[in-house]
Image (cartoon, rainbow, N blue to C red; front, side, top):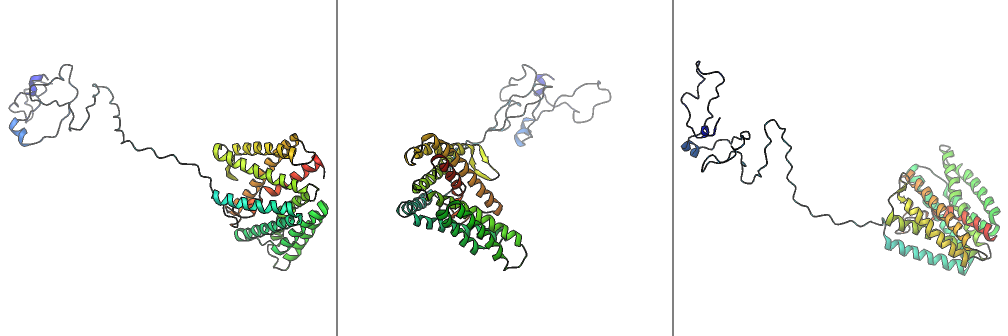
Length: 374
């Protein structure tokens, strides 16, 4: 086909079948539309193949290029050569969306309430600790009783375990006092009688689930009041109020360091199946803060203490406090709860504050006995 065929009139007989005498292989001329007919109708656009070189020019004045865009707003794209695979057309870019504002990391709790409650508890503890030691023993016993109530209540609500609260509360308070008066020997004796009381008290109920209930009761007696007796055993020393203060300070500073560093820099999970919020960076923060605070406390607050002993003490506190926190997190995950209670706004319950203190108490008591004596 040459360029002249685009303007030639249709030949006679074109719309019919080819004659018998026509030459084989002859290609009929392409049809064109009459100008008058084109003005009255709007044919469907036909996009031919890319013409040979030189045929891309306009075929006369007023003749529209068939290779141009079909619609006014269509962008002309280059067509592939014959035999060349067409490329996928690039999608039109979406309209630019405004970038979402950066989200601030949430602390996960009401910091105002948590700080206020923490300051209030600290004031009560410090006043009772340095005014009359017996008052502080009473504070510890009250915390133990409330903690036992929270633990047994959650066990009954979530698992149907009925650990007897009355013998646990009485025996727990007796353990705390016995530890202060008679030391480790008194604490063990009180623990034994508390376990026996749990076994006997549960006999007043049907035998179903007896073993399960008394096992949970003995566990609760060891976990809460027995570990708390090491605090009152520290208090019994001549400089007992300073020892207890160091124990409380190091535990709180360890938790604070873990929280601050983990919230700001934490990316690697420490135990995601137990406590997804804890990170390895937070553990390093707990160790660093506790060791620095331990060196200062042992050097300036404990008689005959040295800074290197404080470094070891701070390291031990950071590890034990973290393990204690993970231990209670494991219990709460098994029970399917977030907090043990709601008594302390911003903190949860009493047990949510004792989780790191309870396992840390025997560690600090033992190291202080080794370093500076009893």
